[in-house]
Each structure stands twice: as structure tokens, then as C-alpha cells.
Image (tube, rainbow, N blue to C red; front, side):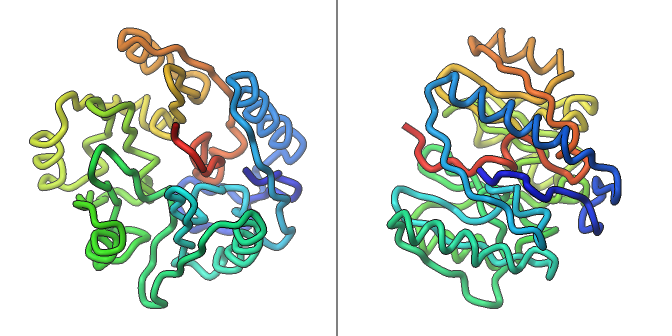
Length: 259
């Protein structure tokens, strides 16, 4: 996770962004609340400090795909974020990760756009990542890759409208994706559950699951009820300041281990 020492919204690169709207003191408290929840669940949190010139650096999940002790660093499509990678490269190098890079002509924004699920990988395409990314990931990880074509720019990253809960259950928001994507999801996923519009725009998809707990954005009662019926406990956290930039719990968290 990245400590939001200088978190603001100063530009617009997704439809959620509201320049000048962030309460920086409140954002720091909300971020700390999320850290506290993780630690209460027995999760170790490794922290990198934010560079002042990169306000979106706080969204750690976008910085790379971490798999075992390897990281595939991101290539950001927008120039406003491209300088973030050097700071994360330094952190991963210091912590003895093997670092791989994408070819310069490939855009991919880390775990914000990808999920390892069973023996395959889901990747979101159509807004940030380029069309050749699925082929690249399939070759690199030797796994089947399913691409989800994103149609609504409000769901620019996969983790804004898509949430794998476990090996059988996935939540998703149908209006965010192409008809072909929806058809394939229905064929592949045993228990595919639709988000309501309120749940989707309440950042329900940007949750973090760990064992039998799910960390969820506050004020999503119907989603919480669905999780409880599926046997999960929930930890609610208010990350409203980060939602003003299009992010939530999953955006703020790059998961290093999934034991």
C-alpha cells in the first residue's frame, strides 16, 4: 500500500475524477482505517510513501501484476501516471522480487485490470490496456486468458465492475461489458451474480477478499447481505475520498500473497 501523503485529484483521466474535491486529512484517516482492518485480520501491510508529483501513486494495485516472487511492472496509458513505476520498481527490487517489463507498445495497468482465477486469467480490455495484452499474458504465464471487453469508461479498470469472490462465484455489472463478454462469462462461471446499479456505482466490485472475510466500501447494504448469505463476514470501510478519483479498497491494495 502507498501512504497518501499528497493525495489530491488534479486532472481527469476517468469519469469519476473530481479535481479539487479531496479532503486530504480525511483521505489519510480513511486509508489508515483500511490498514487497521487488514492488520486486525492478521494481514501484514508493506508501505511505500507517495511521491508528491504523482497523486494516483496511492492506487498500488495498478502498479504491476504480482505472481509468486515476480512482478510484471505496468505501462500506464496516461502520461500523468507513467512516472509512478520507477518508485515501485525500487520497492520491488529492494524486496528481492524478480522484475519483468512489458514491451513499450503494450499498455497494462497491473492488478487493476487482471485477476488470476482457478487456472486462467481474466483481463479487462477496451479502455486502458491494449488488444494484444491477452496474447502476451497467455504466453508469459502459460495460462488461458479470457479478455473482458469494457464498454463503459466509468468501469475503466476490471476491478471497478468485476469481483471474483472464490473459485466458483464472481460478481459483475453487465452494462459495463460487451454482449460477447457477458455470454462467455455465463458459460464459464458456475455462480455468476449481477451487481445492481447501486452496488456497482457504490464500488462494491472494488472489494478485497481474504479467507472468509470481504473488505467492502461502506453503504452497500444489499451487497453485504449477499455476501453474508454466501457465508462470508464483512468489514466495511469508508473510502469516499478515494472514490473521487475512481478508487476503493482493491485499488489501494496490491496483494502480494494469496495463501
